[in-house]
Amino acid sequence: MDYQKYLVLGGRGFLGSHITEALLARGYDVRILDRPAPVGAKFPGAPTSGRLEVVEGDFTNPTDIRSAVEGCDVCIHAVTTTLPKTSNDNIEFDILTNLVGTVKLLENASKSGMKRMVFLSSGGTIYGAPRTYDIAETHPTEPISSYGITKLAIEKYLQLFESLSGLQFISLRISNPYGPRQRIDGAQGAVAVFLGAALQGKPISIWGTGSIVRDYVHVCDVVHAVQAALVYEGEHRIFNIGSGRGHSLLDVVSAVEGATGIQLQKEFLPSRVFDVQRNVLDITRAGRELGWTPKVSFEDGIRDMALWLADELRFRR
Amino acid sequence: MDYQKYLVLGGRGFLGSHITEALLARGYDVRILDRPAPVGAKFPGAPTSGRLEVVEGDFTNPTDIRSAVEGCDVCIHAVTTTLPKTSNDNIEFDILTNLVGTVKLLENASKSGMKRMVFLSSGGTIYGAPRTYDIAETHPTEPISSYGITKLAIEKYLQLFESLSGLQFISLRISNPYGPRQRIDGAQGAVAVFLGAALQGKPISIWGTGSIVRDYVHVCDVVHAVQAALVYEGEHRIFNIGSGRGHSLLDVVSAVEGATGIQLQKEFLPSRVFDVQRNVLDITRAGRELGWTPKVSFEDGIRDMALWLADELRFRR
Image (cartoon, rainbow over all chains, first blue to last red; front, side):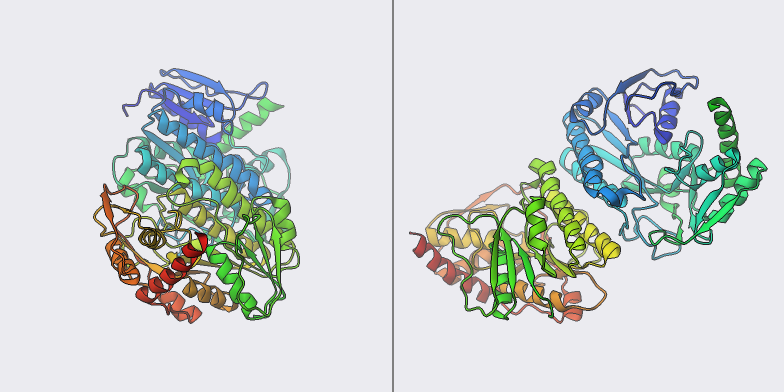
């Protein structure tokens, strides 16, 4: 990587903070843009040799974006303003913040001479109901949430700007990421929610019978995929990033119980219409083109996260 | 068709006015929403047995849209606020007007219990650079203009709303439509511009050598496709609507010269980067599913339009 300065949008977030740390650890200069942090919020503090510049601002504010891109020649876009399950409740907000926000970013980045943008897209929502057992990048894209539609439209604008101004893009369609720093309040997935419930002695709700299968990928594997995307020189632009393996909700329950030694109290609720039965990514292309494969096994990943969360909850009390 | 009342958005426009006339001629009640007409503008005046209600308002005004959909159980969406070649100049405007405008329409239509929406999409821009000789509906969608991207995103939202609220949609990806009432000022395609130039004794500009091939479809064929889409009960939602035949710009020049008996003065300019060499639609699906095939030959269509335009220009003087 011969970039001068890295911009990480959403650099205080779950994925963004891990990416930022990894870049700093390699000695790169990184600017992050994120919203003002709540009092007491921790910031990436691993040993670093690169320099970190923190800019507080809002992704949807064109003025903040204009100053953020200035002087950076590569950007990792790890911001999202909505959640899959609630994005349909206010579609206009989803479009105005995620889509228009990204278009403004692309316009400013093109003008400032930025060379590459790595976008964290959504392998879990962009395809819609799967027509094949595993889902490759060539699968039809028919999202059943506005969240997935705006991610798809962003990919189309990335492609447009590459052809207009030469700003290269890579879109990583990430499955269900999990790991340290993930929110346990229900916004970011089953692993975090179940682990949080186990360690806090709370019951969990399972929609349906628990047979729903998802592809869970550890944040460390996501970070390595981003690093591979930053140096990739081939012709592909879109990559599935997942574990390539399916685990049911009941598998997650077992793994959480195994890692914590705590028996979860389960409440089964009627299944939700928008939950597809199975969503597992075919990650062949990323293996072949990026030379990337996931390294963290499901069981190890859950154990790792359980240790972090136990510490974290102790600290919070 | 057993709908109570039809709503045509953009009912005073090139395509919308022909669709409105055809519905009125069949005895249907039609409401149109369009912007206030300029002084002296003609309105569809063919013999009708249905009742016409004209509502003046703006597609991008949610209040106007809310009243427009009220009491209509089917809608033909023939509004666009941007042009392919200039949409990249103000992408935010394209998104805010076409995309957010259509989302507001869908929200209101779903709430009011509307049953079906027929959307006039763009076969000329939604696919991007063709990877096959003719382009089927299954071809990748990689638009090289914001115009094409917003049309694609609209299709995704149509699909989302069908799954959320049962509002059925049909999207007609129309190639390059031409015919009476088309604007000759350059906004709506080569046939109109060349005919206008011939009849007004003006020179024409041709980017490149004139070998660029497009699929020109007569407005009467588009109207028939809309009528077929209104009663279609099969499982497909997206149809290419074109002639299925390719004609080069030099073919258009010959046909215009043949129809008018006037020799065009041609100025050849450097080719434009965003013009793909060939864009011809595969219309097999529409033939099989809608029972629709184009009837107007290229030569007949140009002659028909030349007669209309000669009359029209006489009237304007």
